[in-house]
Image (cartoon, rainbow, N blue to C red; front, side, top):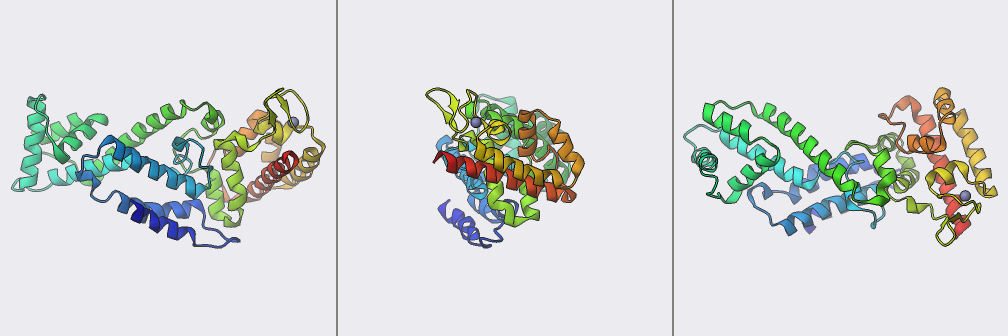
Length: 336
Ligand SMILES: [Zn+2]
């Protein structure tokens, strides 16, 4: 596991401070080299729960490192903005793909005969527990509700092509992973902003923007940190529940600091950088944002306009990222 991580750590040294490597590129390197190495041969091993957890933690820590997330934020929030699937899903996919490759072998293959025998044995005598990789395949197939499909293919002797099996597997795995991820996110009250902004496991539009403009990576990291940990805005006075900057008795969150806080320093920075946003193209987008309530506007900005990145909008992405970065910077320096 540690040797696999080294390949990713080596890729962190790529790029420079002016042009760093975007998270999407790091993600591609990770999936091409590190994850293949980390999970090599694991589809044949029935891992213990603690080892599976160790693997999952390593996978999520890598997602955090690539995006520059705080180490203390919940692990579960790490991989969705990159559009990754969980390590458990990677193992399930590998195991069931291996099963299909075996089933597509000619009937003379001893491996195929053994797998069919084990599946039929499990079907007719469920009390007999198979062991090894076949047990793993059966339990994975059960998890994805694919056992009936496999049994129907075994009894009829007709197997769908591997590409079709792979696409069916991918759609089942996506649904399984998404429901698991949504349920886990509900367990963390600190992720309330994250839950409203990251609603699906897909690449966050701001990371797509960074691929277009890598020099903005450092500033964009501030946006993802606000989403996963609202604590980056430490302007809330816990003792008397007032904003440390303006003294108002409000719930000091991202929306308050970005658009409401009446601290003179923040007001000055806000009006200066928001004027730049208003001059950015497309002008209609900024007019629509001005018409929104502050909470909706904040979520709309942090979500990357709730759609995929559009190159023609790069101008407004740039000015908004600079706006948020400067407000957060001045907030931190005013408090410290
Ligand atoms: Zn305030």
